[in-house]
Image (cartoon, one colour):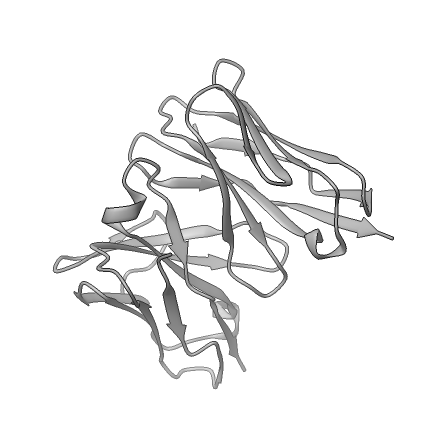
Length: 119
Length: 109
């Protein structure tokens, strides 16, 4: 099946620094990737939809200047949390659709997630 | 609107059967998904329903009634490893997933 990886799996940083999270589709080309965040005991919240070669589409309330998304290739999307603050601490998860297998059901394959802790 | 509801928590006994319900309201619908999520991990796909009826896959089955905006996930022969959160999500007219808050399932011996 389609595999999505994320790196790093866990990161701790100081307030004011920037953190980059990578999301890779390992065995397929993903024209569309999604970035979610999840707070403890809460559901997934879609932050943005990342399309290869174009600007990401951000959900209402998500600051595009704070959460920079780049989807430069068909297998890699990155999320950069700029000037991170403690309230940005969360579980960030990416997902991707494999056009060849998602097809009818539009299934999303999820990465393992990145736990960000901002001190 | 984007309303989707499921119980916050359920408890069941090992070896038993449990049904997790999900209701939703939407003007555009392209299918209903169930995902399993263990604590600290990403969700994993369980099932997809786009037509009314029951889809069976091993110990797990999922049901959909589009007219009622209702789905359930049925887990049989419960095992301790089934302790997890179960997320339902519908796909809207823009093919975006709209997620429920998840149901934490606790399995007791």
